[in-house]
Image (cartoon, helix red, strand yellow):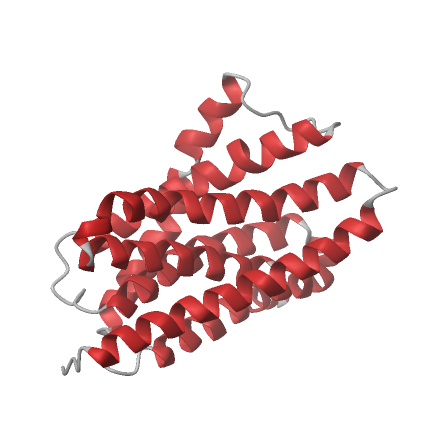
Length: 240
């Protein structure tokens, strides 16, 4: 009777923790909570929007669900997940920020992008745990440690470059490209490693070590980007 509620709780708990974490990081001029709720809900919608790309990609043969080789794994990681998902998130981030008067600090780009990314991750996690009903506790713990923080980091990368493109127009073309390219590469590499692990038992041990190192480096890099934008905002002596 209570299992569905427990699944939803386990699926959303890491999302809530990371939302609170990024909100508390935005110390100088926190965003209005309703704006962050809006970003989160747009992120939920991005989960559906991503199918508008992933389904056609599959239909024209850019990737297949039948992954048997390393090349198949990489194609599936990028064209089946990273590219459509990050494109959908970017579309929703643009819709949230295009006329947003509160987007006045570099850190804001990261905050909104993380909210969008975690909206996507939240719905995806709920659906994923319900499809693994028998083992939802184990799957939920694994995804809380890796998948949700992964989406958090992809959001940090997208928001970091989104802010650079807005506030530093001299380098806007490069940063506009990296707004999408950076999270797509990080997301694609993340998924590629896991997909290859599934098809290569001989390499699984080594690849899992590589995966753990990659996750650690990605979190560290994202933390540095957050710190960097916070310092830039402090240098401007921005006051609410």
